[in-house]
Length: 75
Image 1 (cartoon, one colour):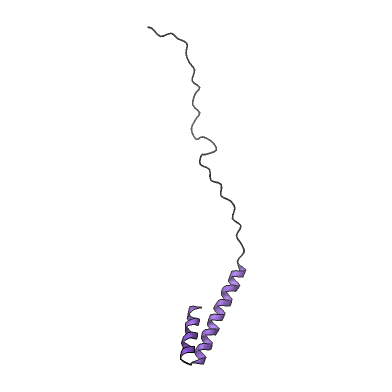
Image 2: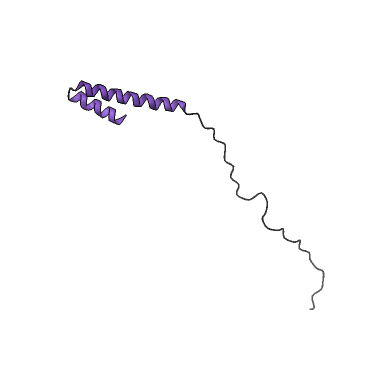
């Protein structure tokens, strides 16, 4: 598209109508192709990403239950 626009600009400034027409044709075809490709794209439905900070299960074994023994200390 850039090449076509530059060719059209040079052709228009130098009174070279063939270069001007070629540039306009090139830019027009490039623009039409770009619009056609844009319409062919299907919208991508993005699923929300769920981010878990902690795992659902612990990877280590559970700790044993602590019990208080009722022994008297030797004091």
